[in-house]
Structures are given as structure tokens and as C-alpha cells.
Image (cartoon, rainbow, N blue to C red; front, side, top):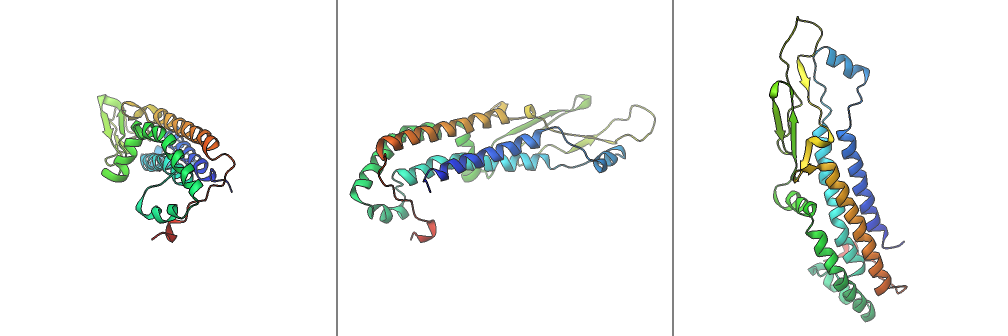
Length: 228
């Protein structure tokens, strides 16, 4: 199997999570039971924000992993546990891998400098969740703001304006694409750009592979469980 299967699969995973983010922000598809609950004033919690932010977090991890996977497969991963494995490779392959690493370095640095690469690091190594802001303008001049750690409420109390009747007593809050932003821009738009940047990184890395390794053998990296 080609060593490019891993990076390509990471990009596919990233797209999968981005698709689920689109689903989370799409208009609700109420079933008959949901509609009945709403008529009787009940709130239907679609866990919209949990779905959005969980897939956002997974999207960032999948896309961010691509440079590291490529470096390990085709270049020189200089982590301590990989040293013995790398030292055991043929001298010609070591030379090619070192050259690959040097040519890929500027692409890695550029990808690491992207805003969503920083957002991933904040989630994985800092706060435990990515930076994002939800802002919803409700009725009666009310504005709700939230983050992954402090989501906006699922609903808020309605103000009666007419005679009693079968109307909801709570107003459901349903987020849309423009309601959630990262760095002041819609989250889906920012993530689509990051996906495209990850895809461009893979293409640049493949071109370097053709120039450096060509048809020469490249040893697959070992499973982590085999490293000491």
C-alpha cells in the first residue's frame, strides 16, 4: 500500500468532520414528535452545539496531523523514539529522507503559522477546546453569546403577547452558519480554507516526494507499540 494512504485518509477524515459541522448548522429537520413537543411548549434539544464543537475539534486534529504524518513517512522524524529506527535505515534512504525534510520544512512552517493550527494547539495543549464564538440575536433585543465551554442556551422565555393558547412558552435557539465565528469569520468558511490548505500541503509534499525519492524504496514507519 502506498505511504500516501495515511495523509490522504487524514484529509478525508477532516472533510468528514467538516460535513458534520455543516449538518449541525443546517436548519432542523423536525419529525412529527418534535413538532408535537414544540406545539405543547417543550424544547427539543438537538445537542447542536455539542455536535458542532466536537466535530470542529476533530476536524482540527485530523487536518493538523497531516504534516507530521508526511514527515514521518517520507522525511526525518527526529523524535527520540524514532532515532534507533532511522539509524537502521540504509544510508541512501537516510540521505534522501534528510533532503526531503529540508525541502518540506518551509511548507511545514507555513502550515503551522495558520490560524487554525494555533486553534488546534489551544485545544490539544492549552485550554482543552478550540477558540470559537457563538452570537445569537433573539427577540426583544436579547443577545446570547457562547463558546464551546460555555454554550448559548437552547431556548429562552417567550414574552406573552396575546391570549393563552397552544403556543410555545420557550423560544428555541437554533444556530446558523454565520452565528458561529473563529477570528471574526464564519466557522464553516474558515474550516473550508484550512481543508484546502491541508490539501495543498499534501500536493506540495507529493511533488517533493517525486523529486527526492522517485521510484526508490521508502521504508514504512514502525507502529508506535514497537518503539521503546
